[in-house]
Image (cartoon, rainbow, N blue to C red; front, side, top):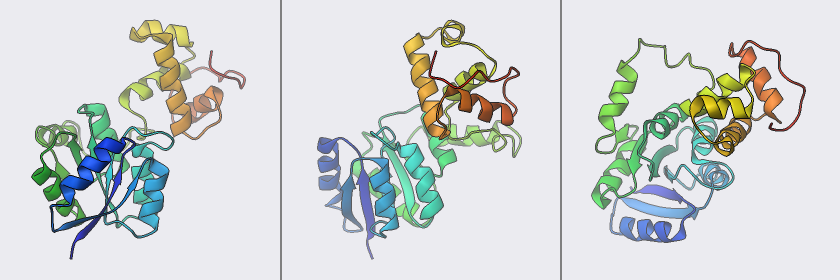
Length: 225
């Protein structure tokens, strides 16, 4: 029995190369290619995949949101992240969303195939250099501490921005505090609004305050300042 794989990535050249590489593996069959997270979720629901090879940054629904949704609606389908981002924020956010494995693009063909087979069997797999960081993540704090973090769908930077927004700081204030551009802060704020599934900055503040963040009243509804 072969493992059915759907490739979710918005770069056609990479998809074609990965499909060609996997075609040599008798234990793996590529059953489809999709270009965004929503299509990856649809493929999982259609029972066309045992494993979704998931890129994290795609247009529309991101790989993180798609991973979280697949875990909710099709928990038997394993998500194996295959991304160019080798950083702790991406790794830990993917883990919290429910990914069973995390590889960085550039991994050898044999490593990808082994990871696909492993996650399909219910194992957790991390690429070279990532497993040690994943272990450190879980052992750095007492059990349950990490799970208590509100809004696990947000990256650490997005949580930092949300905390400051909930504290009543303006975009300019936050940019100065974090030594980032105002455009970058607006992008982070937009991501927060999208991931929390609220309509605007004001509603994000309300959600944050309900979770115990911030200490000032929310401003009237409106766009980004």
